[in-house]
Amino acid sequence: MFTCPVGFSTAETTGTIQGVVCTIGGIISSAVPIVMTLALLFFFWGLAKYILAAGNEGSKAEGKNIMIWGVVALFVMVSVWELTALIKNSFGIPAGTVPSSQGLLPRN
Image 1 (tube, helix red, strand yellow):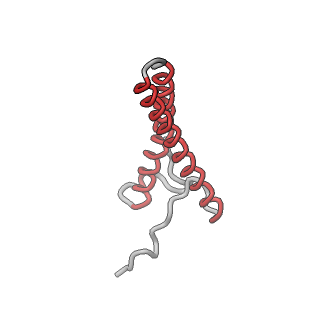
Image 2 (cartoon, rainbow, N blue to C red):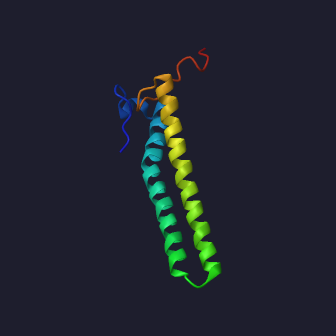
Image 3 (cartoon, rainbow, N blue to C red):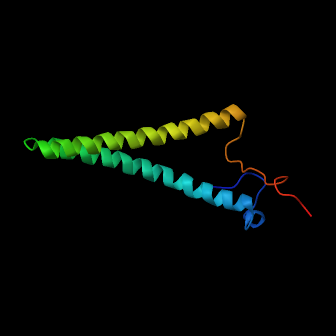
């Protein structure tokens, strides 16, 4: 499970922007491996459909189309993942940090 950055307890972040970011980050961190697995299974499903449709050109084309979209989905997900890591490393943002909301909103 996703943990908030060091120095933040669950009680401190509940109902705050940091708490919301921690929660959303946890959901995304949990969902990424599942979605990547589904894209890989989608590719293998298209591969099986392509192989099993030896004589039927329509089914072969459909299997080929499924394989292409599976590879495209995997490529996009890995590219975004690596682009995010590159941006974080470029700006020196440590892993697992939550942006601070101090100074963004005026105080009375």
